[in-house]
Image 1 (cartoon, rainbow, N blue to C red):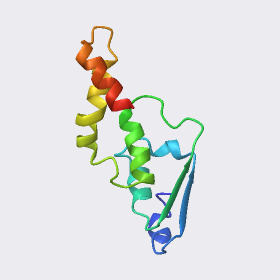
Image 2 (tube, rainbow, N blue to C red; image 1 turned 180 degrees about the vertical axis):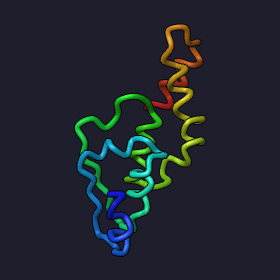
Image 3 (cartoon, rainbow, N blue to C red; image 1 turned 90 degrees about the vertical axis):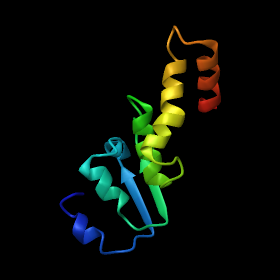
Length: 105
């Protein structure tokens, strides 16, 4: 992808379909940044393992398919990832558990 990025981005694509789409889980990776630069109204990810480690990876995949719908990464982390993570700990307070449930619903 990165090797052909300049040539491929000369075109306006109707669809971009990423097979092995989990390879764009890292929002700062060069391949992720390259894929997000394509001009297209339709984006699809195919993956057998979309999320393996954390909600940051999930944000990266969603941000490719629906750019901006979950906000910026820092906003998503503050409003969703941190509350969900904190509410999942064994020593979480009832408020943290409730917040986890509300954020993940």
